[in-house]
Length: 192
Image (cartoon, rainbow, N blue to C red):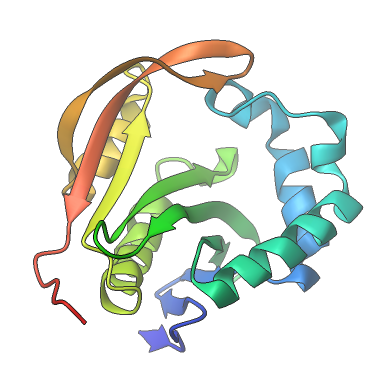
């Protein structure tokens, strides 16, 4: 396993899956990923304005995300097929809170052509240890819509435990959607 991670960036590769922190130079790649998967991701994400799919929007957004990486407040990562160099998904850790909570939220998306091939499981198996080991998170929270069985299966496989049900939790594609709340705890957490 290639691991060039640091306290500021995630960069791990295992087999044909590479997960790394985004950079401003990824604007074209990220915009293209979301354009290519626009219809497929639409039922699972917030409603997107046309500008969301433009390269200049992503260039600005990735500059801000790079600053959040540097400050340790959020991590927006890209998932690639290491052989073809094609972007297959995203993994994000947001709302990082340090003492006394030591927690963050997990979000992710996966390309339509990557479904059912284990990309997200492998990506999360590299990204979650980074958040536990380098960022010293005690708890990672994730939620999914009850009818999203693929997301449920991924989270269960990663060891996330159900903690509750939230009615009308997130505005997804213009509709308030219920979500199942889950979390994963760091069994090796130590006060730094």
